[in-house]
Image 1 (cartoon, helix red, strand yellow):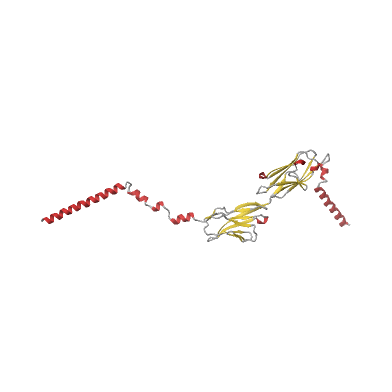
Image 2: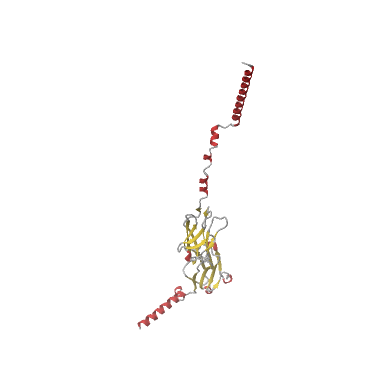
Length: 295
């Protein structure tokens, strides 16, 4: 073996030692910088487990649906304002229309009123999901089914029922009352079939409003929230006889006739009441007509 061959073999052994050292260093550095087992790293990188597909995520969050329950019933009294709600989630570019079902009359499209009856109006605030139908000065004929429709493909709808009631006053007791002079006259008026508390209740004695006639011994107290109004006269006199009418601002009035008698028979007093006089007049006219026919 010559000198050149020996030199090459020594250089080859030196290179091999350098390569083995570098490989050993790299393996040691990798082990020191990764304390977690390889199985944990594999699970952390499993994206299918951690994150659902984007299509499923959008389908569950952006689906259009009605938040107002179908067949909701709204009750309103004559003369008041009715509000029919229609809340729609994720409406997108859909357009809301209101339709009166009994005659399929188109009332509103978006915020535009298509009906010639301007009592109907769609109420919607910007960025709101509520498209409420407002009906002012409700009438008995407004009762029925209303459709809230969204122009999607295919169109989707819910239906709401509007019930209309007529509020009325009601005076407790019989329609006629009999008292002796000096007795206490107490009348209680309640407002029934009402969806709104009355703003005021006026009492009339014949044609005179008496809510503030304290000097005449008349006291009127009204509780609008309870829909009640009381009229009290501690010592009634003959001047307090006559017709009393309870008149709420938002209901049909009610009346009662009060007799004040002094030692007379109440049954005899009844013969002078307006109802009895009217009945006798009808009887008299019937008798006259019958006699003329028999002739």
